Amino acid sequence: MIARIYALLADITTLHVDAIVNAANSSLLPGGGVCGAIHRAAGPELQHECHMLKGCAAGDARLTKGYRLPAKYVIHTVGPVWYGGTRQEPEQLASCYQRSLQIAAENGITSIAFPCISTGIFGYPPDLAAQTAVTTVRQVARQSDTLEEIIFCCFSQTDFELYQQLLSPAETP
Image (tube, rainbow, N blue to C red; front, side, top):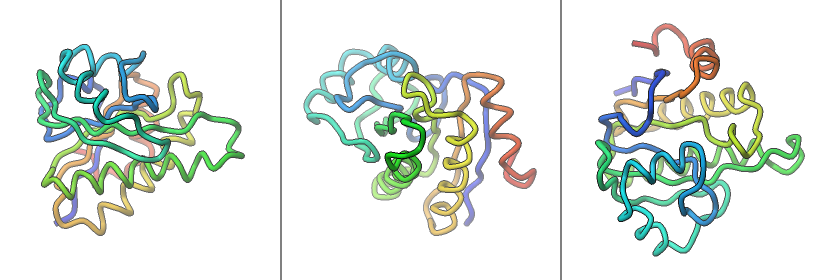
């Protein structure tokens, strides 16, 4: 089965999927942007579990429960800070998607939603981040027999349009 891959303009904390991905900082503790929104929606139990994980390196990911979120799980991944593309940022960003999908497969997760990783305070150019995200997710999804639905959940209209342009009509609902 080939996973359905599409973009959605929505608040990731409201999605009814098996897992949402958190664009986390390396401490995995609440921050701004999508990370702060996920922690607020999930409740204090998420912060406690994240504290127990003792952080995460850029390009890697960790799994927690979703607590008060509609999603059963949160996969926390730490994207790279943008330094002009000279410090392996594209490879680290691709690794965020690869590791998140690997963790999803290992835990029987069939539906997952990604935010726009690293494009907020980490300064990654949205168009370059979207290209890396779509290319990487397509590659991993082709090799997966468990993933059914992969959503690029965009909070802004501009990001949503970027993803729609990159995804073929066959992949959008």
